[in-house]
Image (cartoon, rainbow, N blue to C red; front, side, top):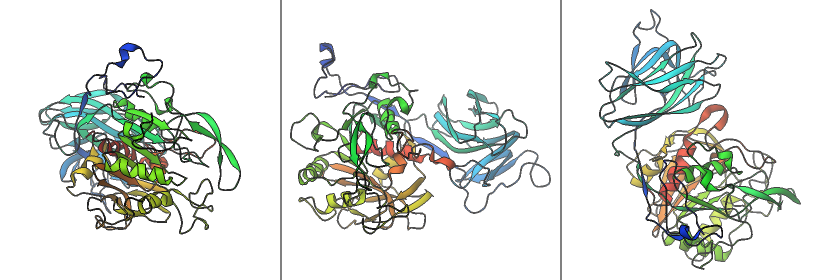
Length: 528
């Protein structure tokens, strides 16, 4: 039973409903054709990652700097930095190793044009550690820098990196300038500039179909122990814990509340209560539909039930703590083979569940039954009764790694990979793990398997130490990531130890995780 979700763009997304909720009026039973939202391609990103040495280490004070600023080449493009530099001190707020730092009335100016226009721009900013807040503004020029127009209002910096979004809506040639407007000698940091074009072209972007149906699993103890992998939970239940006995955990229900109809473009993720609520709220903002599969409900495919997987486009399973039954494994394999999308999320582990991991407890076997998510996923791929030879082309390694962050991202021409890494939700260029697992790829078993991120120490494009990957199977699609922390929005069950890996990743502000999960969601749903 599905209800229509309102898209953040103000367009009403609609789809064929499989049923009718009791509260719906008769008029609501009429389905309309699925609408599309035109999204725009990322045409430029600049994260100021310059390798071992900064090309601009001093402000513009003679004799180390020019009085008119210094030109630097970043990712093959020329920029002018006036009273600004690229720094990596501990006080620099950065989403990686480097960020720009500006003082006084300094500025950073593009010396080139984006030729496909600009729709929107996102920029991260923060107050340099120890300084007091300052303001800055974004300006654009359509005449090669002869004159400038401010976009939106001035931004006041805070102590942590915060994303600001500007609507520019200009076609043709456009260039940008970031100006520090107030605060005197107090410094600010600028990082991760993302420019979306206004031409509808480029890699990624494209058209995102609305009305896709996402089912988030809550039936395999995703709420056990310190986990809270739910989009919304209004009740409670007793759940087994690895130390013995049970604990009181929040319990997901099928339809999240309050109603999806209250979600607008400015709705915060705390509208729903769950560590995955940010993910679900963002999907609804984009016109998609979300539900949970509650505990006690079996995974089925082709059985005709209200929550049979045949009623959904994508099944999201974040760190399952119980093995799938034989019937459920058959259902999952057939769901994917027949066109469904499966989002597989694992967590850290150790060589045996009888041992202890770096945290001093049984790997991530949160309910103490001898299985954690890496073993649950490997059991699906080696003991499903249909194809037991890693049919998705990978195997989850029994390891516990930290990577903060990896910038070892796939840069090839695989069209599916580009949609996930450079799609409608932005560019995914950094991935941090906080006790996660890796995968070994077996392209001989499935030639479509493609790594997306690897450990920084691993070979890009290799088969070892993959942190995230995708593959197709039959007419369906799968995406795997080895750490649940990246989807964690930092809220949910107040009794659990949660942190913001979705958009915050304190203290360093890595924010590619939301882009990755949303782009992967759209790709799995065949929505882009």
